[in-house]
Image 1 (cartoon, rainbow, N blue to C red):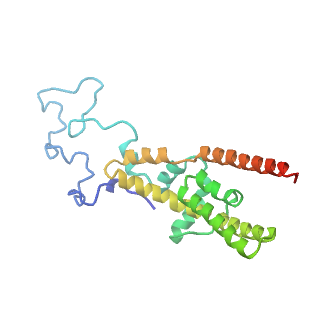
Image 2: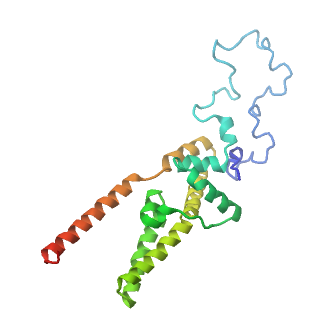
Image 3: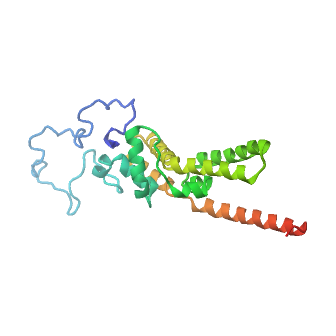
Length: 232
């Protein structure tokens, strides 16, 4: 599947059905002049040394991502820009989800062990918070019927296995959601959309550090309370 950034203009664009919309010379009044490339057609005047030919419209293109590269970028390229380091670990799962048009089972170790923290780390904040709230709700419901450690362990295993099987699939949906958002925010500037994706993508290491600090404080306070009560 590819993203044709040459069709990156909004639906109300009056030129969206123009077959020559991608022609760089479409606005050149002399485009049909057979002598347009004659260096003497303007009285022998030429561009300053090193300046090169001036593009149609009298302005040079913006620096940054080359225009020809932007027009050929694929959906996988956009995903790679957003995911950044470690994209190869998700490429296979993303491809299977693309073929099926929805979530597919693809085992991942990190969601099993870290649960909602992994989702926050991967900048899936909505999913991470939803899983955290769901864990509290499940724990409360289980506590109404059974307070044994075995029941809590069983629920934790079920939740962990579910996240391990569908974690990559949920990430697939989150990544494509961000790509669609970038295309909506910058419908006429695909290069800016790619810059936005790169800035918004990657991982959030700070959230992991904050969780570790809060967890350490919780453990410390729990141990201190048990010591105060003489249970340790």
